[in-house]
Length: 116
Image (cartoon, rainbow, N blue to C red; front, side, top):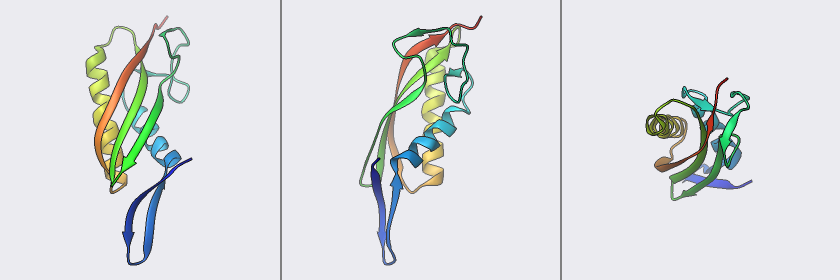
């Protein structure tokens, strides 16, 4: 697991472990209606290459974060609207809890959850 340096001050260095950032992203995802496959949500009847929502990659350089996600969305919802809500929630969560600036949240809609 990577540690991303965030700040070096007179007392030392503050670092964020990648798992901590992933947990924050998952917390943000759980706040978005229509996302399946996070914390056991979803019907299990999912179409697409991926069968769950997950963080693909987190890259941090010079206090700037780029986050790449794959999401599964409930069938019938506007995919673009759900993806934009994900982008907003993830940015808000990371920036409110750390001193990192989120440059991009790249979202791939990787599947549809067909509710029965």
